[in-house]
Amino acid sequence: MLEAREITWKKDHKIILQDIHFHLLPGECVGLIGPNGSGKSSLLKILAFLETPTYGQLYFQGQSVPKSVPLPIRRKIAIVFQESLLLNTRVFDNVAAGLKIRGLSKGKIRERVDYWLEQFGVIHLTKQLARSLSGGEAQRVSLARAFAIEPDVLFLDEPFSALDAPTKEGLRIDLTKVFSSTQTTTVMVSHDFKDIAHLTNRALILLNGQVVAEGSPSELLRSPQKEEVERFLAHFAS
Image (tube, rainbow, N blue to C red; front, side, top):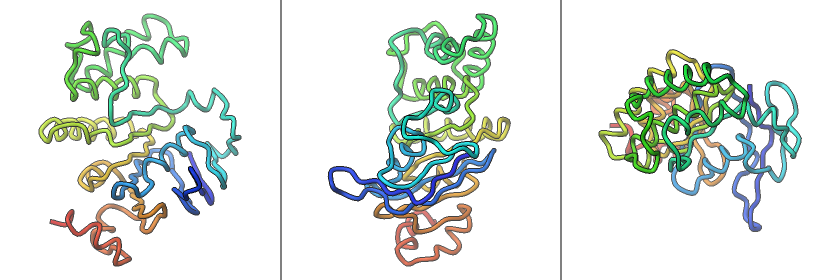
């Protein structure tokens, strides 16, 4: 579905990512995890075509992606950030926005918006203004908006980190159910290994802009491969 070969990214004369190789299979949920400043969110931005690598090549569904990413490719992906970026309109209109751009009929838009608001437990907020929502409600609406366009690849950049613990746990459970039913191909960034363990099939650990370990969450905990990885994972092992 998505591949990155020999990705290096420099910003302000500093190397942020170095010689990254990455692949994503259809139906996979792959996690990118590491401490602050490790380069995980930078890698997500490059994979989501929000930044252009200094060196290396990206491939989407088997085709080389040019530096000027074609709109048809951009419309096949969806991104949910740590802070919910909602329009100052009703909840319904927020979720419908991407569907209107894609030219769906009013009936189809209504059907799909209602379905995804229901999946994330916020159908009762349909007519509410987005700016009046709590943090957890807003993130649920952001996820509904992303899933509504039925993306080929979904990117989640620290989707739970701004939420309190009970809200985060509830949303994690709901998202697990949605992944199970949709098999949406996903890349998720988190600094919390619990998110990775609950939601992903495979994870890459980044330290200092490089991938230092890769495997299923259980494999990484059981056999960290390197001392620096073991130190990073130590406080998640209990």
